[in-house]
Structures are given as structure tokens and as C-alpha cells.
Length: 154
Image (cartoon, rainbow, N blue to C red; front, side, top):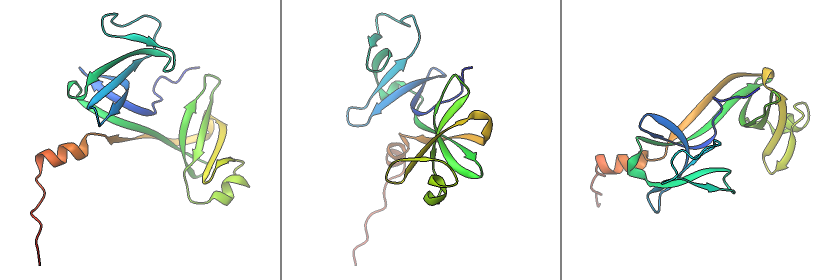
């Protein structure tokens, strides 16, 4: 079983299509990663073992959107971030609610770092599954379109 709609991390939209992408604000560029068997365009993409896909770098201005995606769901009434989906019908979740004591005791989560509790659960036990997206160019757009007010000295 595969979950093609599951997304997490950096994404970009170019010519109406979404791709996994990594935005570098310092250089103003985007690294696009395409995971498929065949090279989508040998004149542009090169295989990258670390990223396990075909990789190309583009100027950020060539994209309609550059955004980050986090996926959340409720598990036993508690908010959790879905960090990974497996083909065997399970999901790895990160506890994202306030009660860490519940997570490790009654919730059965494993604490991996301070305030980070993980658990693998059947996908059927998750509900209210949804994405939250963050526009990575919003601050730049706001600064370019809405000048900051002059500082008032007293």
C-alpha cells in the first residue's frame, strides 16, 4: 500500500506541478529532487545518492510557490505530527500535544530526545489528518510590497 498524497518537508510549485524542493534563502536558489526511475531531463538533472533522486538547482524566481509542509493527525484524541508513512499501513508519529507524561505512559510513545516522543501506529488509528503549509517567501513578499513605517522618535 502506498500513500502518494503524504507530503512532508520542503516543496515547490513550478508550472502548476508540485515537487520536493529545498529552498536556500541565502543563495536565492531551490534544489529540486525528483524520485523516479528515469531522469526527467538529462540536460538539467543529475542523480544524487544522498537525496536518492534526480537533483537540479534553479533560481527561486522560477517557482510560483516555495513552501514547507507538516502533516498532522489526531491519535487517541491527541495532536501528533505524521513524520513517515510506510507501505505496510503504518505511520510514524511525533507527539505534538502538551502532556508528555501521557505520551510515555498511557500513550506508549518512546522518548527519543527531550520533548520528542515517537510511536509507530496503524494508519487506521489516525483521524482528522491534514496538512499545514508555511509560505517560505511570505516575509520577503511582505517586505517588498508593504514598506515598514518610519520609526517615531520620542
